[in-house]
Image (cartoon, rainbow, N blue to C red):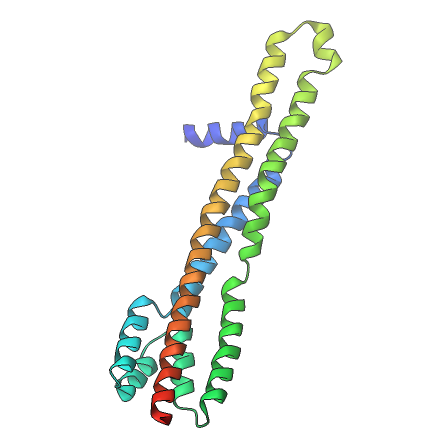
Length: 205
């Protein structure tokens, strides 16, 4: 309880900019949870990619198709639909490319908000600090001869900058994590798509 009271006290000392910073922090946590749950269902995983590519490389197309049909995630869905679809390799390639574009767009969704918060949060904190320092160095404090009030006001003003940096660091960590998962998902889809097209080219020959 004492820690909560101190946190609330520091929050009020940070000034009005603490409210948009609080909103930014809530957005970061909300987006991180939502994206984590979505990636958990949309990502087929590296294990599936390795097993699928191994089966396709060994020529076990039936086993690879069964693996894709029984696995979850968008990559498994796309290759399963492609392998069960009649048509030429060019048609299959075009289908996988179009589906991959839609999947990547959904995976990227909301990540730009994290990028905006990474940039905006330190600026909000700096704005709060500047406003607080203007109040500390106001002519009224100087006339009353209150040096302790001035230094204390500066200390309180720095709370906004520290809070802004904390929110930015949190947003940066979340953004970097999901950006890395996005890159991994794209690489895994490319590997699976290449395995399908190579198998079809061998079959044509």
